[in-house]
Image 1: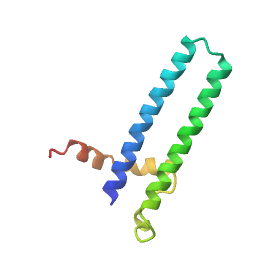
Image 2 (image 1 turned 180 degrees about the vertical axis):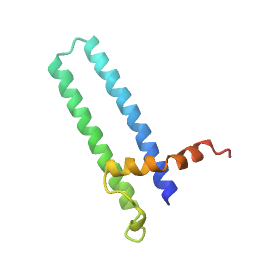
Image 3 (image 1 turned 45 degrees about the horizontal axis):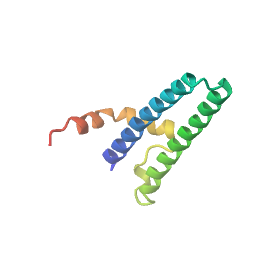
Length: 101
């Protein structure tokens, strides 16, 4: 169960890298299109709120997926705690990703 948590969190963290790339690319395109600073800042704010909501929902869904029976094996309650858990289990991610099947 813990390996599933670790891999799920790893996938979510990786997807956030894509979100960051998309944000930077969109801002670059907006600047090239001569958007106003106000519009660019509004986009940044909306994007950051969406990312925060994605983080919160993702962790909440992982926790809820365990149900009450397995709730004691979830060692985190929020995004920061989940990232600490992921960091402390990075060897499991590496082993999973490098396993030859």
